[in-house]
Length: 182
Image 1: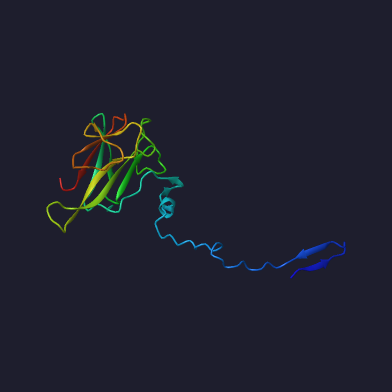
Image 2: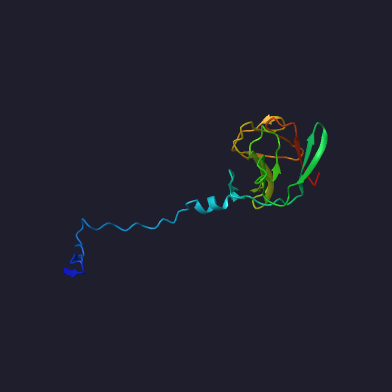
């Protein structure tokens, strides 16, 4: 029901209440059903280190290694360092020191170059036994990752074995993988 309101300037304002629309079939729309599918928003939020988005997401079978794995780094046949890689399930190689677990200093290497990922998989010998193995995955680096002097395909897990030699891009450093049972 409309009414009028006068103020000091004698300006008239009209207000009215709107009536509810009729419930005819054409005015009704079915309410949107909830979508409980994974959006990936939470994973995207959590996949940052120091505010830098990571190119790599750990797979569901990621698992901390059960052996003491080490990377021996050589340059010109001289050992320059050793990395223990047994404390977490993945290790990122790259030039970006804010996110890389194992820094690569050669300019031909990418900021986020490759990852060693430990994965728990079913043993081929028994049905119920699981084993944890290391894999390398190249993160679509510009100049590639090399396993035993052969370039690997990017975005694919390649199983690593003890005494394998990794090289990154045009760097002359060699990373030799060993574990404590050798």
